[in-house]
Length: 318
Image (cartoon, helix red, strand yellow):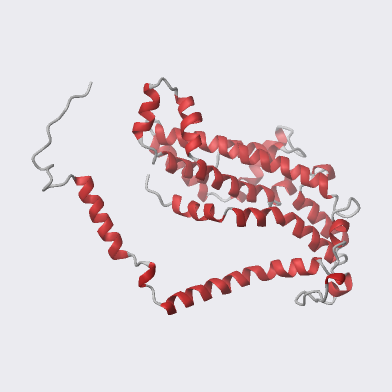
């Protein structure tokens, strides 16, 4: 039962409260530390945009070579003609794409189905497991919480190569070799970086909102599922993006655990294509590479703002 308290003599209009004064000081410090866009000179903007344009071109050059080579004949590719564009639309070799994805070359569709299953399972697993652990660290007070959280974060400094052999021995003892389980199950055991992001977001939710839900009779599970998880849309989007890119482009883990040709992912199918044909049919290999990287390119351009939010969110103070 709460009681009304009379304001202290220092908490008057002439003497603002500490949080208000602190906020004003922080705003003044921010204004002094950072400059606005209007204060930047024209030459500084030109130099900044020139550096960004040069960096963008440098990163796009390999992608241009792959796309350009996928639309040319084998003789042109063998001659190293990756710079010149096709002279006309009639000489563009669109037939390279269906040939590259055919069953005789890459067997694209089974590999695509396997990759979609693994990637979708990993995305769902990371969202569920990391949000649960982050919610526990953010909203439950228990002995040793800080030590456990720091211990979890310290595992990010452990290279994956150190645990590769012990984990392989564990999965082999469980009989999971040549199956999708070694690629899916670790995603359901939470990732320290994503747990950190969820925890940072959940700590920003006002405590009054949680207390109002408890007064309405909501349990901890209901607060997590119907209140916290719907609010964490930006974090979920970030986790989806990074998990999708990691699982879609993963080559080492499928190479270790998947042996059967029918279980190959797209990365393994591309590697088998390269190993089988060597330096021949390079234009087909480039066409297959373009198709495999296309979902990642589309996702990148569609979710650029979430990449920026991920960098800003990791800097939030707990």
